[in-house]
Length: 190
Image (cartoon, rainbow, N blue to C red):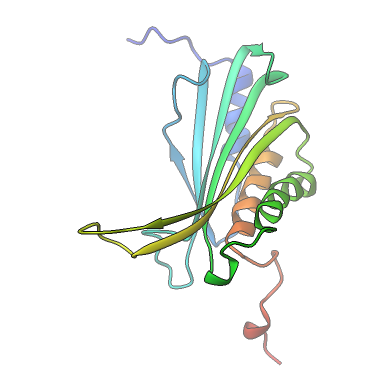
């Protein structure tokens, strides 16, 4: 028998609204264990972009969204809920060192929130370009160049479905997927 208090109804409703998201077919959602020490109540899920060949064993783009809830609220949050996200996308060689990439990466998030109508306050985060070079007996590609976006914001209200939609749109943008309903020129039939 657990001594942990039952999650408040407001938290349960927020989790249900996140679980209800139905992303586009190229995105795969899976539940995650949320870090337990960040708030009294936490919940999380991951999103991966499926590659063209259908192999998602090591996706080029993935992310996770963590819901934090403190019924007493936290001054820095400006509310009782906080959403924390992390998205990582592999870069193409021509994107390396692009000084505008962080600005573009941040716009993926802000535009996704705006287009989804996901009302929020206290939005902040970072966009980082990373390069990892492997040496010795470490398996895998010799070099990985990625862009990483880390952000958090306080949603307005406890229906977080629009925030989940925005997060999925963020991952789709980071993966370079075209807007829903738009086909790349190479796949259009004349």
